[in-house]
Image (cartoon, helix red, strand yellow):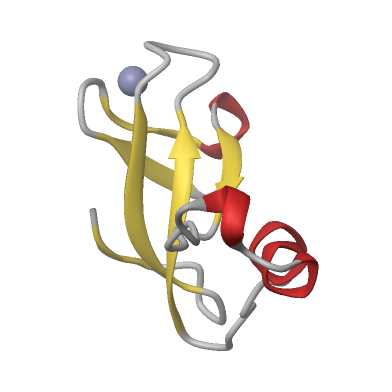
Length: 80
Ligand SMILES: [Zn+2]
């Protein structure tokens, strides 16, 4: 089972967490961004093979949101 490091609670089983997606830079100001750029920001993901930055929430625990780097091939957490 995948263990993820909550910065508040420590290592916990993956089912305690909710995946929040990839960290992305929000186009600003949003009111001036064209629809295609906004759709890319909202819907398109890199989903790269290998080291990948991800947002997680310890939704079954303390509720802390955090970013970690995980290898999408081995599932190893590289950096919390
Ligand atoms: Zn936690």
